[in-house]
Length: 501
Image (cartoon, rainbow, N blue to C red; front, side, top):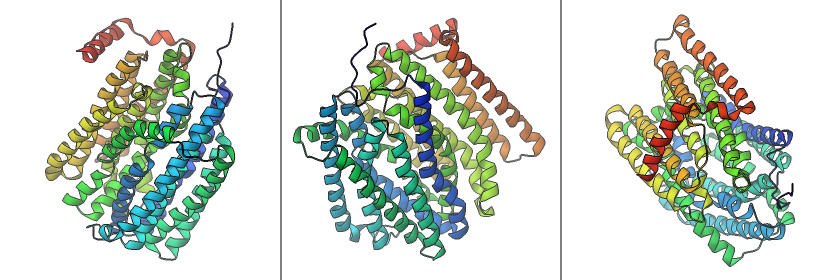
């Protein structure tokens, strides 16, 4: 059988199980060190800072998130989209141009950030000038770091990706410990982040210049900006569901309440953290796989496996997270536990969207996902504003969950319309609904939980995990069995009617 021509630079290596597993493990280890280290450092910070200081740090971080979305310009996704299937020489030219664009944006951000210092320091959250300057410099460097990291993933240099991220995580952790012990407070935490970011940037920039160089190509830059601006718009809208929520809580509650909410959110993010090995490996390969012969079926199988793994991990996190909060953090943070269960479901829905949303990235334009995010974010913000006044944090969480559910439905329909992927709908519906019910049941019983009462969610969770892993194993041997005829046929009719009206 004649082999299809494949670009040697970005040749997909999804077939060899050992290679894919090795890459996923290295990506996972680097993400555990990058984001997991922040979670590991959380008990130390919580025991050192007051709840009010922790709440203020969370608000400052939300400002940094908002700015980083604007600065990043979606260049990472743009790189994956345009360089993935190009020839070796052309891919290097594209990457060099996108890297030059990221450096130009970084310089622009530094200048703009310094000019805005007098305005930022008058905000209600009281960001000091020194803190804002550190945030500005870190954000500028992050925008330039994203492209070299994406290039390492595209070229399957997982070991180098791991080393550079591991070094940054360890350095930042050591500096945070030293600066907090020296009583530098929030400024010390921000300074530690900047120093670690700067060291990573210098190393990655050296590698990138050696590998592809840097050159500003007008045609590539304009094409990249045209593709990426809807992604940026979507990112800014996503801030309404991951950042603005802190400010809405601040309007109806105290800084201590924000700290409780932030603690719950960080532990809930363990679901996303555990999915990062798969997500980082798959996001860099999905377009290449889709372009292959029978690529849609391969994508459907891989995404289905990802959803199954995500569901199992979500159930496990819903069991373990509350005990970790009670064990590792000071007693004043026990109020975060009820919020944790609800935010786990929010993260679960968000990760489901990340897995199924492939069709909206296939075309040259990404405006469809922008309008979906506009609709979902507007709905979520309205719910948060109306419900937050009466139920405070719970009202805000209701808005977040409603928005993520709406995104999930809309992105599934839109993605299937743009690029149909065959999924085992019946099995995935069972897995996702069961996961949500178990997590909700565990949360409902926690408030008055005694050991006999807690036996039920533990037992239900154990059965669910065992059953789902068994289904996953059988699916690897015989993928067709999970298409239950009656249920799949009914779901297909509903899907066609919703998609085509």
